[in-house]
Length: 189
Image (cartoon, rainbow, N blue to C red):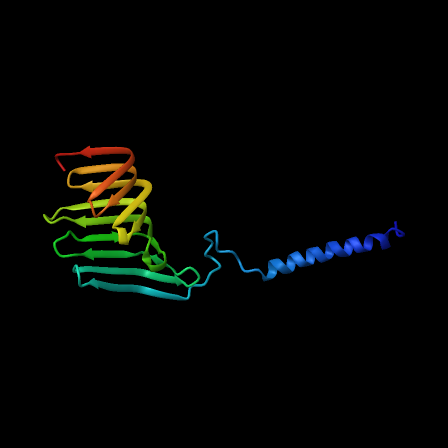
């Protein structure tokens, strides 16, 4: 056995070198964020008790956005909000209020993803309101479009509508309910 040690020494040395190379590679490699693991990333800035007002003078749209905390990440130009609140007000149109537990915005706010206790309230001209409740809502602000594949409850006056999945085209004022739609109309409400 001792006589075979000199012949096995190069093999042992190669195995040790391979293990050492693997260990060095793991030690210096940055953690991957491709799978949505943001726990190892550091934001380039954080703003607490954030609030902003945006005014479009062409159409009179006033937007107020506030959040308990906003974090921005430079690597993909994304923004994350904790407890976001949005108020849209435009002359001649009903006000709309949106809230959620969390939101993420892609670069240039092309896509907004609202998560956790999402509630949208639209006030009608004649003092009525429509409330939409869901756990997730994907909003495309430039297209005035929103959708979800989660369960949705819509409450308006004396009507309650439940559905799994929904698409809203705010330009055409069309709401598509995708599946398992239940409609309850109570005249006494």
